Length: 148
Image (cartoon, rainbow, N blue to C red; front, side, top):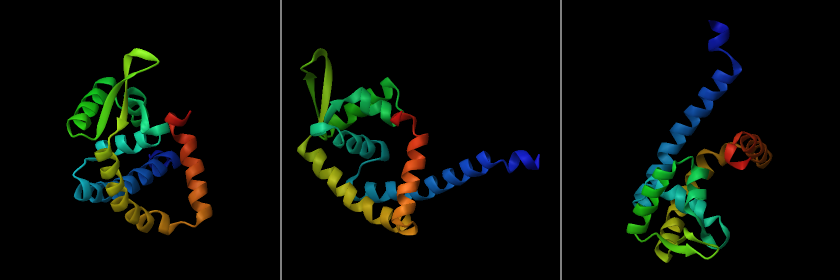
């Protein structure tokens, strides 16, 4: 049993999970305190902002977050009701919609990032050298299925 319990993958996965949970809860609380957004709302806005012109297909953003189509639809509706995104017809496919950050969405995202970054710097990046940060980015990117 010890070999199974102490398997490198089990230990590493547990460590990744612990670090993620501990830091993520505090990060989300900082964002919520600053913006009123929950974690998935903030993450959607952040991922959308990375698209050219902060405009893209909601399904692609949702897929990158690991959301189902139904989950993405609910999240988009919530963000649209809050005035954080705007939906328009896709000029290349009249059946599809594109979503874009609204001015209010951009402002709230910026406010959230301003609350988010100091804790990231303090609790994550502050413990790693720049070389270690690049190495961690490389390793985690190899494991991220949305990048493949």
